[in-house]
Image (cartoon, helix red, strand yellow):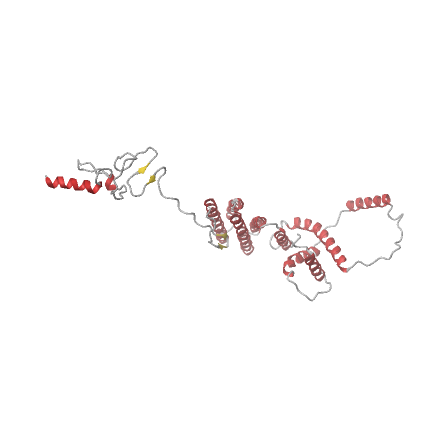
Length: 357
């Protein structure tokens, strides 16, 4: 609110309101005009919208209170003419008073008109007021998280409007297109919030929206014809993509990968892949250059040599292989690396004995 109604914006807003109501035009355009255009448009619509006045009972009660106040405070009975001349207020003061009065009047009017336009559907007289009110809500939102949630609320509203105009194919398709647009805008803000703050809370809201929206769309599917169902399928495909994006971001946040420079698309940040898990069995440590794998019980695979036994200095690296562990048809026991001379020495002695025979 402070950013919207600072001094320069306030004065320019007053000028634009004056011009919109037929006042003298200021032959200048500022960079604030685009930002204030929606608010001026809303004020113009409020000015041309009929708002029922207070009831007769309210006027009578208010008049009685004012008369009692005047009698109690001596207003009128003790009033005297001012001795000093009355100075005309500067133009800037008048402008500020007009703005404050306009804001107060507008606040009262908006409260009634917003409620009246809340049920408006495309084609109704108050529908544009409804959409302008939504733009004002977005402009006054305090954070990307709030704006993202508002967009998702508007997407739910567009779905209700599509249901209301489902017998009008053009209106139905337009409502679903607006729904998808609101959905994408909200998803982009919520996924960015989740990755920026590394907090999946925003994704929780996103998942709840996808679940509920798909349920409501499923109910609408049975009420429309085949071409409309095909258009609904496109919206369901979008929701499926949003669900997949949310799951990928959750995984990336859980493992610390985040987005890792993957960039963005229409749905916001793209999740990076988590690093692969380290290889190796649970509770086992492979020692390079030996056949030993130490386990929690101290046993050794591939030869039966107890843990801690001395290993020959010349033994080559012989990791356990299927050939070493498979049963052998020969009665000769399988050689092990723990014997003198290593496996090559053992093989030499065996071959020498066979040839000698």
